[in-house]
Length: 442
Image: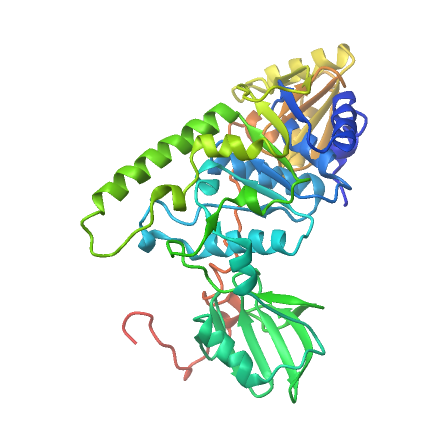
């Protein structure tokens, strides 16, 4: 796992090493981590998951915080982090489901089912929804690999049984196409579709490919084709925690707050269910479909647990406290920033300015060079959500967007949301005489 320069600076942090050592000694221990500031939580997570082969689930307080944490973790570790979002906005409102989110959720479940090492980031509204059971997932998945003997007719029948739509070219999950001895399938378990090439009735090769360019991306030794699971079906349901192997580690920020959110959601679901009793369509009870706060606490007892934030619930086997403070507010006043940098330097602290790009780095260097005094700092091109000051390592990390009071936008992959849009290359290649169909008017 490659790492960023900032991560390398924190390799020898005393708290980081102590926590990781405790993880390795007792997989089921429960820890409290106090006074973690800014991006330190992602730095701690990056250090703790490195070289650990069991899944790790991180539960943040809401979707926005979870996405910022996911972005920070990906930036610091340069590794794939799975996002587990909610699939619908309101309980029992099937028409409000989000296909992109269903793909992300299925990708997580499939990864856990195949016992892969996984780093998963989520939030209360997402874990509130129960999912299809592991036995059901196994029954509804088709695993194929090169050299398998499968007829094209059998493959087509499976796709129809899974309610995949047959199209000329796949553009989103739940579609497949057949051209001669090639079957393209967009499974709900993968962000890219699979191209399965047959030689007679033997699978010759399996590759992922880019929808816009149709070019192959990666050769696969085995893939799992998974359909979209009915969210409110009569099939057995279980929570995401029941998918986790027992030696997994769960990280949760403010357990009490998460419990309250789940109980409030469950109460709303119960009221909505009461209003549906006269509906001719039968609906499952809320406790079959959703997870309340008390059930979450009962399930968390069976895992190794790291609680961080401000409120804790479980009795800790060990506590760790950081000596940190958040990045101060400079109100765009560079004199205040320069004074703080010099004050920190005189106290023996190392100053880092984290810039979102080379342009921002040059901007800082030009501003500082216009100042009369020599200013000590190291610029790093690293886009993270929040700065902080670590008083144990004597390190100040200030982000450019907080200094300039600029909104820091999180990046959330929607996977296939842009696949149907015409590319710039296609647009610029249009010429007189080409036929164009309008999306509304034909």
